[in-house]
Image 1: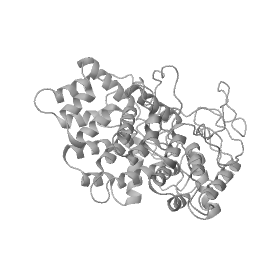
Image 2 (image 1 turned 120 degrees about the vertical axis):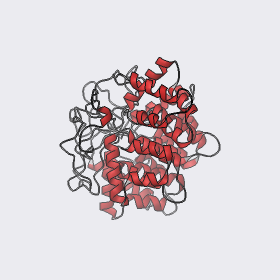
Image 3 (image 1 turned 60 degrees about the horizontal axis):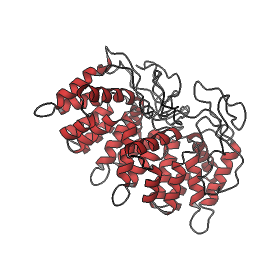
Image 4 (image 1 turned 90 degrees about the vertical axis):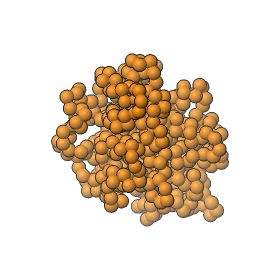
Length: 473
């Protein structure tokens, strides 16, 4: 459920002050017959040792590109690629009813009871998983189901203060040299900033700021311009601060930039959402992200984001109970096609905003089996506008995150004109996990019948083009 899957064999970095925030995304491996290639045995990275991210660990899904490690990493201490998104979801098939139970994340013991009693050391939750925010009645009488189990960890880069124990003095000096004096060496900036993972970027940013008594992000903003500047600044900020800045931009001024809001907040883990809310309050001096978002929305869409920002999704480790899946499918059908006039949006929002990715995949499969139509089509026919787009984002990321992101990249380029802000942020977001980026490129080639890098080159030019291409390599 985290935005980025955990890096392979990530070393233990300093812990979050006061304790880790709640967790991120975690997904099962694709089934046999998956349209994507199986993992290669000559991966340049060590296998994952456990879940640590906004990205769940890769468990036999898309393989990183074969061959030696990137040239810029040779001769250096090898750090795993940044965590990205969970492995692609079982596309196009899903497990039959009665087989929804997924194995717990690597390193965690399996649940001991059918309802997922918490392991020793974890207190029981205060309410059933998916309970609506205070003031909202439950949409239906569901069997008791709880989110016991270890929480999904935050994505790499979503624990404030966490950095990689690497020496970035050389990179910091090269960045300063590229921006010192007359003219700017854009190629050097692109080369240096497109390489680090989230934790290495945090180290580089701190090293630069401390060594030169300057601010790396501010220097980049002064020395570059246009969409090149937007790309380099997004990289230098790291995933957490960039998410926070994008949320503020989405709701600042007249109107709401709905696509940006959806990209950042939907389909995220509890841990990542809590990290985003905390960093928002820090950067904007105590302002509440929830209140700022709610004041910019209204009606049913506001209600949806109240469910989302409550950060009460079922954890990835929670067991999948067939009876609960069946009940959710029944409630969704009654709330959409079963309503004579309009739809019961609150029920649909509550289910999609509070179930885990694994539960939503099972719900999607069961809906198709029972009613012989995809849940996605039902949402398109029953919902409209921002509500429709938001629900489709939540469902799409749960069912097959890799394909969803490939489609989102195409959407930012198709038609008249390029949606550059969306393109920059979507490329950079995928870039934080190189394995995931490779999976997205392969999915894009399969579903859109063209090469993603070539497609981006055709929509951009100059240093801006070179920066995006570097992020996709």
